[in-house]
Amino acid sequence: MAGTALLGRLSWRVATVSDVVPETARAATLLLEVEDWPGHRPGQHVDIRLTAEDGYQAERSYSIASAPDDRALALTVERIDDGELSPWLTEVASPGDSFEIRGPVGGYFVWDAADSAPVLLVGGGSGVVPLMSMARHRARRETGTRMRLLYSARSEEDLLYRDELDEMAAANDGFEVVYTLTRSSHDGWSGLQRRVDAQMLSDVSFPERQSSPVFVCGPTPFVEAVSKNLVLLGHLPRRVKTERFGPSGGVHDI
Amino acid sequence: MTSGGTLRRITRGFTGRPRDRSAGDRLPPGQYLVNDFPVLSAGSTPKISPEGWDFRVLGVDGKTLARWNWEQFRALPAETTTCDIHCVTKWSKLDMTWQGVSLDVLLEGVNLDAAYAMVFSEGDYTTNLPVADITGGKAWIATGYDGHDLEPEHGGPARMLVPHLYFWKSAKWVRGLRFLEQDEPGFWESLGYNNYGDPWREQRYSGD
Image 1 (cartoon, rainbow over the protein chains, first blue to last red):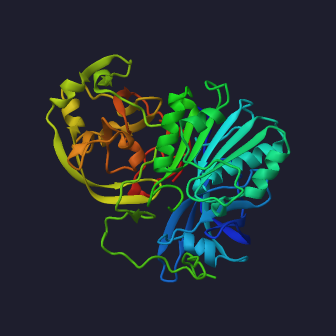
Image 2 (image 1 turned 90 degrees about the horizontal axis):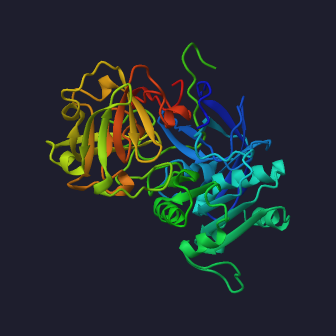
Image 3 (image 1 turned 120 degrees about the vertical axis):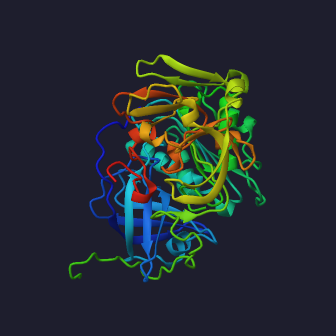
């Protein structure tokens, strides 16, 4: 297991919002400038701390969406109606605002671009965010590593990064994306229209099931079902890495 | 500008949730209360049948000092304990009721010369703990939660329960522990998380 190197203290740093990009009706990407940011690996997350005027503080974790080589650190946040930080991050935060950030955190759910084995990514909802960091990293590094993303969302309107994912796939250099919608689709939708199931996972799996790393991120029931099916299909449990978020806990303020 | 004190960084326009004082002083710094029971683990949930399960206590040389199969383990005196749980991902849940066997029962008669232990689980998961933190009524092997069998996604059939430390120390799908002469980092402890994990000192990450 990598990561036994000496690890310094993760101190709180100041992040300044340089731009806010609306992604969907519920999600926005914050582009951040962070003083002395030490860099990250694709799949990692950060802790954010906001402070109210009376000194009250709240912390949550958010996945990083940008590639390590990107100039700005990007976080894509989905607004949770009774969430504590996400309403501020998606609706109030504006260029010039600043808050505290700590990270990067998490050394396990990480894709190593030096690993040339084909990679399967399976994302549910905003679980696609850390997977996007991996896809972007692959694109920036031009590694040519085969990578497939199976991305499940409620509706077309809920899909994050659709244009960018389609562009990456259109480059025809080994990246593929398969969408599936679980609730509604418009006429003319050519993608899949059901929950991720064993057949779908079998169809997207690379033949190299023993060596192919798989990253699964999404709500707990999604991750439980997907990871169980992947192991039944012959993927090695130790190669199936998961990140979960529950109705009120976990890494996405959901 | 400050006059000697620390500058508190106010986030423009952030008010936060209505202040919930119901937890009193039971919520460690940076934590928030939840009512449900979130699931977090690094991989797929393993399928563990009671027939193949055992719990082992290994000496520093790796030799088995004690072993219980499922039936023998279930025959040990169990107790019910109610505690607050604090996860490093920031949720806390108060008054969780568990059924399990105290480590004091399992380690009765075992020579406790070593100062550290590595708890190991089904798969590759490990977590390290000082022996002083798993003895003296501070740790259990839990097989039940809230009056029913522990569900697989929460670590069933048996998980470690060390409520005074962040919850990753309460290893799911536990299979035993090995005594260590010298402390060694476990799984998350090798990946940037704190070696000890005291929520009251907010020891989340390496160096905290």
